[in-house]
Image 1 (tube, rainbow, N blue to C red):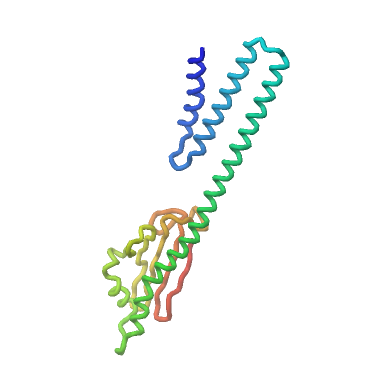
Image 2 (cartoon, rainbow, N blue to C red):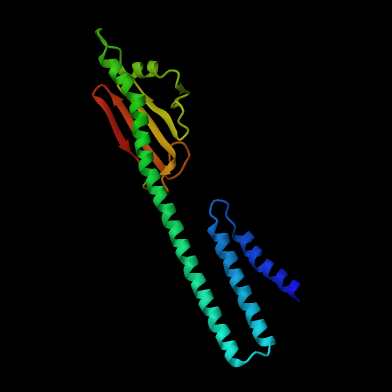
Length: 209
């Protein structure tokens, strides 16, 4: 009989876990497995209580102890669930703030050298700032894709490059933006996206998500 109960318990725990298991979020599977395990414990408890000639007082005390244990376990589980989700949300917010700084710094590194070189010219007429940008960054631009040195998170593309202005679209592939349903230019969804426009008067930044 113990083997039968062991098999039943294994199925009631492992079955729901496998059904609700999500690779990127362990909680659905864990909650399902915990629910199945709780139902198994209740079934086993009532089976023992009904099949064993305990005194009524013993049965009542045992039932009260079980309720206390299950209640304490539920509160502990609930607290852990809320805390992990709070920490996850907080880490997401922190990464968003970091992402803003990374994108702004990356756009500065991409735009400022061209802006400075434009005003360092001592010839007239001056070479257009758009042409300077393309010349300065020719090793980084491939089919309108701008590649930052050693940065695996920032994805950028030249949206427009004329003599008078250059528009650079930038996305942090990790940090989440304000709207999680926002469609980023590179096919991602809900990520931080900036538009930086370089002109002779400076660089204009606009956060789009």
